[in-house]
Length: 186
Image 1 (spheres, helix red, strand yellow):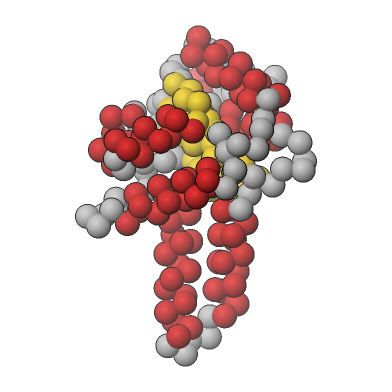
Image 2 (cartoon, rainbow, N blue to C red):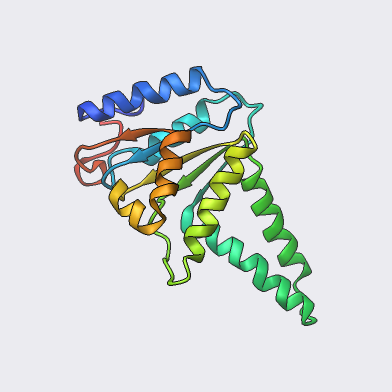
């Protein structure tokens, strides 16, 4: 935690929330949702949670859009395999990767809301299903997003955002972009 130098009161509060979360982590599936503009340390602090948990916890980290790509690839590779394609190794690798992420005790789902949104709501449904399944199975999900809650409500649904607020502690952050003003440790 010493590597993160807060430059805004909301960042100081975020550091306290992260410390408390690490010290009191339980197996109930509750996580943290970091909301705020880009470059203010959301992913850095979420990563600090992952690194601060005891080694007995399985952790995973993936951007929301990459998770959806893997999920889609699993189905496309399965269809190719049924059609006689030589994709067994690729399919198994994709399945192992997804299973590892889905079954980790704590998963960092980075940049929620930046993934492609379709008219069918497929992306939103898969993200919602992942988070709900993880919570129902006692697995915590840490979430970062540059998008405010009103955007997330439009993207996913009011019910989904309400569920996130129920299962995760929300950490709203603000401040200057560390990337534009210097390193996190400055």
